[in-house]
Length: 625
Image (tube, rainbow, N blue to C red; front, top):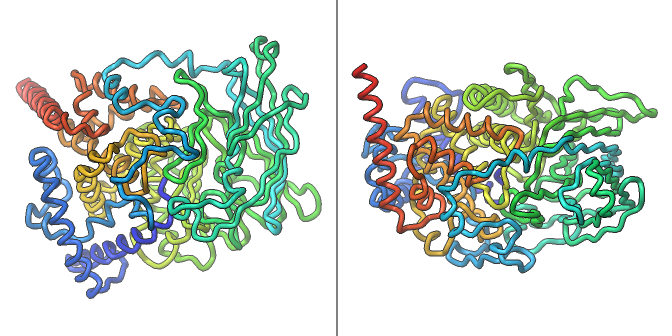
């Protein structure tokens, strides 16, 4: 995920970097097909050289051993001089710029939206608790996650693109996890009123137009049921006798909505309607209780389990559809004159998203293994960018499949939308905003790759994205860096460079009580969220890779993902897996890197040193044989 207005500033920086890369490539006698601007390049070099030198001083002082050697070897083949002169580090490593008008990192209040302290949110571990529990072996979650029959969503929806209206119903068949209540997240309610503050402006734009949402009928087992709504959460009391039967319940919700106009995940423009997080979805209840988090403006405020979806979609003739389902072979059936019906089905997925597109959309399709990789863009977009984005999606998809396990679905769509979301992942489909399809630049490649990595880290292996965002964002970013270094070395080197700098210059965050293992509501702005959740986690993994080697770390990640395929993984389970692979307690390493416990810095370095010595010993023993 990467959203918001701050992406515009990052894009400009990355485009300057792209110019620098193209100039260096041309000077070496290679042609990437791009153009450069010598004046802009010189200005970028001068400005970023000063920034890099300043940031590097702190980073090198803190981690003069593993980090500095790794930076020189991986990101700067030219050595220390190249490190001091490298251009464009800030934009390349930056996921989120400073939110205009937002609080500084030192002003975090720790207060969740709506006045609830983040530490009191259901199931939200305090940093100290997480530290104490990092070495624990994970509980057997098989019984907790196994459900005799997977939850099933069956929806019938009609979309009027002219009026920007949706009407329909959804049946949810589920086995209750609580004898008293069921809870639904109905996220479109988040956009039925005006939002205030710079973080919402980052997500939605300056002047968003609210939409409407109305529940016309809610039934349980065919009978009208009472419910209570608070924000985006709908609480539904259950009859004890019905729950005690142990049978699956049928919940039916009839709804209508008018779409909001904004720059975010669910909106429209003149050519498309994109629907992210639009269907009502059951809240998760796990061993720590219910997770009833509101829709917040920072990060991805979602936590979902896998289910089966059947969606009957009725749209006017002439429109095209891309969705979580494998819909590539469908052209729709004529229901009534001028209307077509699509029958969409997806099994064992965490959500269901779709885009309805007019006739200006074009697509390109290639097959990787059993999966069709499809890219969608509009007439008038840059053909160079469309081809570049498709190639990045195709190549990274193949790489991730070879490294982290087979992709079980028949289709993967990369869809150009409007707005300013940058990129957003959903099962089987990702959204890219129009900036990635304009001009001739390399800035789109890392975004395409990162969102593709989420098909494994979030799509196949789920996690609580509200309370442990580092687990999907950090692992997806590390996987992206691995691919970029192999397939796009110059881009990869610059991305690694930026992540390492931002991941190690975190003293101000530690003083503010911020770290990488916090609920998203605790981050005061997108900058702190990016630096900690993305950069610090990726830096931790890059340092581990430097000690273990890429093959061993990737094998560990592949095994962990396989163990949690189509399930939900927790941070504690990942730390336990790290401890098992390392052969010693990984708590000091985790406390320093993820919990930003400064007192553990030396212990974390010593842990890495012991891991390095163990590897040298194994290598020597192997050579002796």
